Length: 353
Image (cartoon, rainbow, N blue to C red; front, side, top):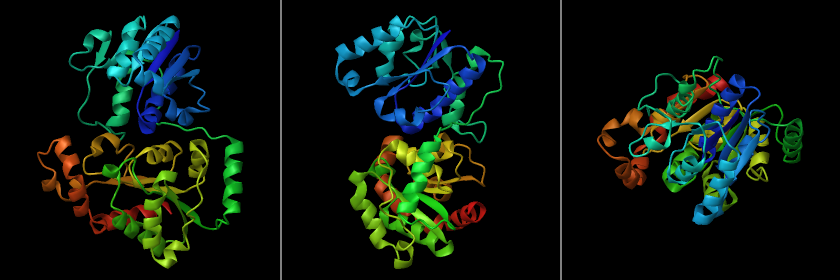
């Protein structure tokens, strides 16, 4: 049996959708399971024994219809028996249409049901603490009536060599071994997903004031000026606990660093999802325009907690569309002061440090 899973989105989506591959491997141990993803996200799939081939959707496939058609025909030549499209957007439609797969599963959405043999309801509300991001992916397996117990937790796989490299890096930066280590998801992938820097400074200071910890910042090199703004605004006593230059040289190196941390706190995004896949407790600060019900995965009030402006001032978000929320996000963020959730953060830190 040959199976193709499609998820052409960012790191968090690709990681969460890998649970489809993991469950398919349990059900069909001898199947060929391939995974089509953006080239920039493949690092989170390395070492996953449940994926036979990672098919890279490259920039050329986005820019050139000729290259996209070429990729679709290459996929058709693989003669897949089953295709599961966890993306179901314009970029995947041609691939699905030309795939030749006997069975094609995706979400039931207007105008595209003819592409698939099985159209699964796109649920609007979560039924468990797994969150919609996970529940929706698992729903794509329901038409198969698998006889195995589904594992709903995304996983990252870190090699002993990567762990040792990180420990050597920690030693080089003189990280204190007797302290717990906190990763701060300092900046979102864009400004509209980034908690105000002055507010984030308060968060970092609060952690440092109440706990004897090592603090690491997660940021891309292009974000270094914003990272320095937060660092320079922190108390001197906090700065002494921050290892500002301790960064992984690439995404796999960052995963290795994250694997040696004890908890993660900060903006929702890829780093949070990777930490959860490594079994690390998480405290998420959601942007006002993001739907918490989707990405507050595994929320249990102990190891995984999250906060959203809607939890405290729902009247500010009521009856606004996503477009309107995005337009008003800077103003809404100003209303989302750290004092609103300081007790919840304190509780999280006490339980996990």
